[in-house]
Image (cartoon, rainbow, N blue to C red; front, side):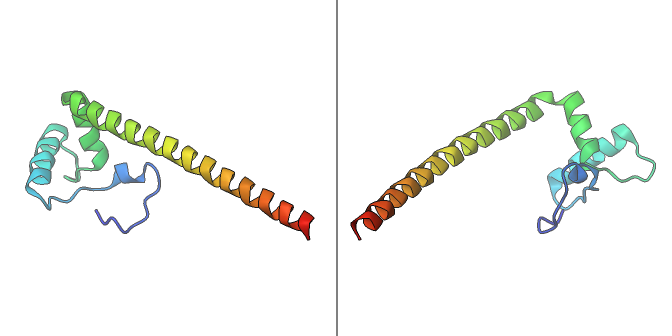
Length: 102
């Protein structure tokens, strides 16, 4: 998968996976044998479906970690936004005060 390509939401699940690492090769062979796709191509979606059925603990761990990181990033963004807002208010108050003194 080329990480420089822009991928729309859901489109990444339709991508065909290439066996460019040993681990991918093992997973592709397993999923390919299990699902036996007519075109012999295995997509990310096929791998996810197989993992959900046979190794849900792994996907749950990934989903939990992703959720925690996203939640943490949201809190960080809110805090930073609050700081910027406070700085803008302070700057505006100084500007208003300077304009009154002129």
